[in-house]
Length: 531
Image (cartoon, rainbow, N blue to C red; front, side):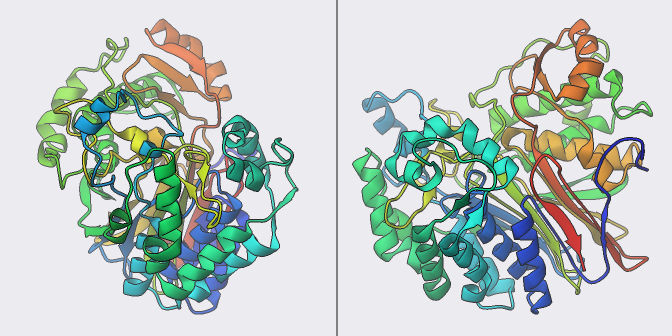
């Protein structure tokens, strides 16, 4: 239970339905859609569209999307992989001939064909109840009529001011006279409003064919990109069967690779081989979590890739034998030697995660991202689409499973999740924060089931994250003060987190009482609301 001597949010409680997002406007729109007769899929897409406007630093239609859907709480869960692919011409040989040894953030080569719009339109068509135009209308209105910047958005704008200054379109949209606006400032995105309206009217073809696609291709090719109209016209995601493992007597579901959900499951399997101390924030518990994370991420950087084009040994990575082997490598008193990181990515990134459960107990775990805050910083001038930089997750190394290649999806950090017990889904959850997400899933569930915390209390706890391939651990302030020295004495290099580590949303279905319990991360601006 929560220690009420500490400040923190209360759990959100509802009976009919619930939504949890990282922006209050998005949560309110999700609730409005549910009250208007929409289901959880409609509400998740509507909320995400709003966040693509009001929280553009974290997500956008120029990014990617993953989702898990449970109908009526069934464990027959459907996954959707809406991650985009590289252009057909993006061969490793081409990069080498061009003298490109690393994919820079603002490079057009960091932009794969965005998969979010495909995912939204497909999910609404297959599982929703409301017309897409109606679902997107609140986002259209906010983009056209204006919205007030919230504190976390203002913070992110301040951090990314220099990036946004480098693109005239982005600067004109998000900055005021070249400076980051303060919280409370009203912004407008009329070009994006028109684009969203076109998508609502014409569906996916409005984005992947016609004027918007042509403008995006021309814009990227002018910067040196390899994108073609054919790359956009043939873009599509796919339904996937979730992967799963047991954790503390429950079943956890994740999207299979090219996402890093498999890494979250690996961490949980390692943690199961240890008995935690009662206090969730003891250095002994944190040490084991850090070491389990370092080992699992080393495996990620060696194996996780687009399974359609590279073999990924899923059964091996989720085997008890490997979990036993990795757990045996952990010295509870000392940090292991630094482990190699092959992706080169270590910082936390931004994303939005949305959880919705409707009156029929349809549950949606939904995540949408442009990777870095404000993605590549490249924004198309007429359609107002801010493009992601997910291509930076590729490796420019011959023979590596995650090496860049034609029409290939990169290793992906964004991962929605669900949990079931007694044969029914009881938890829809996700943790934002780019590379942190896999550790965040394991950390969150450990706090629920190893230490008996409620959703909100588990979300509120301070966090730490070992930078992949190093012995460096970033800690939020409270943990740095309480455990920093102890971790250093064990051989870790400790440093303060540059920004709040991640964010989280979660909804618990209490089948016995017929209620819903929700939590939302105070590191963001959002909230969970039930009706």
